[in-house]
Image (tube, rainbow, N blue to C red; front, side, top):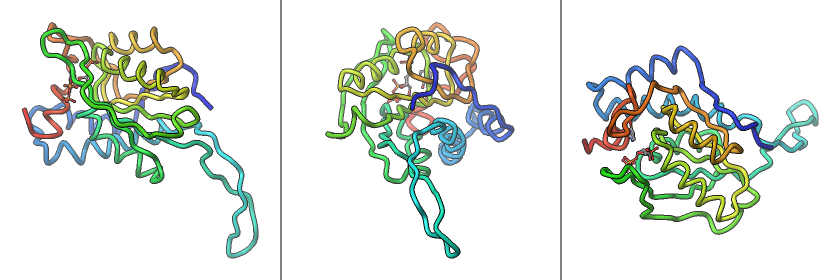
Length: 212
Ligand code: PRP
Ligand code: URA
């Protein structure tokens, strides 16, 4: 089952506190990574809402009763590189998830996405549910490119999870892909002249991997 096309902004005191730690330019990668994982775990809980369930029987020590199993193959697709920082958050909840990789970077001059690596599961894309993950939704170019790619491969159910979105990116994804729900911790103010999110947290990949 699919969520209606919408944006979910997850509001919670822990989310607000963790987002502040991530935004702080003094936060080193050693702290950034575990805080990112904690915040992403909260987002993942919401991103996995309303997954289809099937009824099963389970025998407790007392008696047989009804239980549930998740009734869709979950496929996590991080947009490399920064999306890698969000994968564990999903697999904590869905250990059997398959993981596909989409390598897309944003050209620094044009701000347009460039694909450089693809490795997706060979089966189950059409029937499964893809959780496309990337910490930042800025212009929306990378997300739309990734969604187009996945749809061309036959994927029918996609959810996009990010930490911070710009209004411009949200609008672009919603206009091009109204069927793809967006789950985020914040929709920030705007993009700056370099297409960075304001106030944002800077370059997510550099902050995760310590390459800035
Ligand atoms: C960042 C980010 C998104 C993209 C968002 O990746 O992780 O993939 O930019 O920008 P957009 O919405 O304008 O496309 P980047 O290109 O810096 O690559 P990286 O993950 O390898 O650092
Ligand atoms: N990519 C990032 O990592 N941060 C931004 O603010 C915009 C694109």
